[in-house]
Image (tube, rainbow, N blue to C red; front, side, top):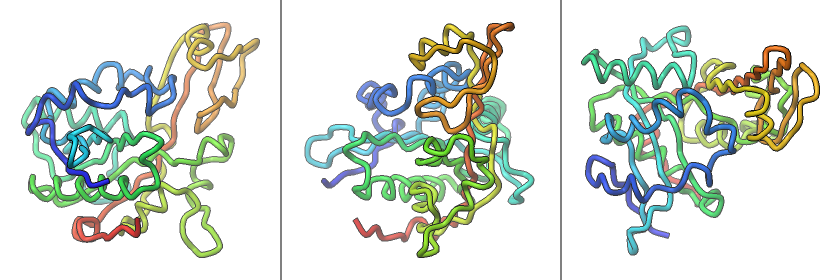
Length: 256
């Protein structure tokens, strides 16, 4: 399927045609403070950095992508704490006019039937192009590993290092980033935080938590910490920083 990238600055009406987040993300992922308070602001305040991939013939939105401009000093130690921190910093810089030098790839929202088609690579290439168009010199991504939910009790520091017999990274999403020229940065073990009451979490997950403790749950990249006495549960979603070279990502040719 031929497709074209269109930013929300170019066609604001695409925001209303976007793929519902509930069709992309697990229910629990839609309840983090950053998502609830800041997600809509990306489209409103930074439309030139949000885009849709549209079918070239019909104009139908087939995927959505989100990026933010931020500041990074180029060192592993200088990377933000993760998803939450990067979005907060980007919106603050947009409000106050502080300088930016880096594009952060926040999300590539691709429906199930569009995965494995080369669309993800095209989205990453478009992100690199947007970075260059806005004079940004670096591109980073707090990557949510595709298969980490299969190994929720394995520390992200170990999981991210796993490789296949051919030497490529074990995780498909990390592997694509590396194939497109990215180098692996440090882990972000608490990239995205989601808090809620015990009943809220039981509703989101369709599970019961009879006592306090850590629970593995479907779709979770790490265990959920439940405190029944405090009526509170916290999930810290781990990511992995991938650091892209803009020239490499823009010239990548997909095999799909």
